[in-house]
Length: 243
Image (cartoon, rainbow, N blue to C red; front, side, top):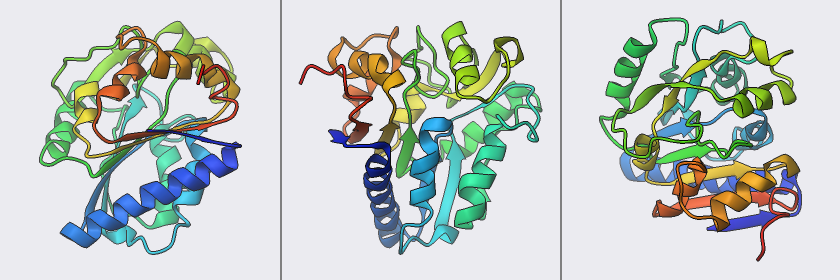
């Protein structure tokens, strides 16, 4: 499903209401909910709205996340662990969470957190779409068949440039060249995906995702094969769509 809202604020509100409803439903059915969270500039307004949604018992939520830079300190402004602690875990009061520590042995972290994640599907996963069409840190050409829950990946130049453009790093040379990323197959094991994509600079990637062929060179295009995915756009990010 594609939903186009007028502006980023309306997008964030609609996506947060959807995500909160899915979390509440999982808790009502099973007594707890499993959540995969995305990070980055595109998710800030959405997460701010989500933690203020009523009726979510965050003490019954178990949290995983999509990706993390390798070798980056948790004190660095671009650290996704720092991001989640400050924007989701702390404000919501989540007590059960599994963060990807890119300062430790990356292969061991992939195995350890991946083992926990694979015990049962996530109820809902949040995602964004990169300027290069990436999904998590699966840059083009993405691996659509890898079964491991987390992979060690190399970041391409456009991905690294995006991080500079968003203000997380001063220079491309400062952006780590490698990262831990949830695999596409693992993301697809989530029962539902809520994809939040505001901003005009994402319009080209959105068009490729929704109107192009499903192709590893546009990793997010694979989202069209998931049985329960909603892509939230604003007028700017949807501006190049033909429909």
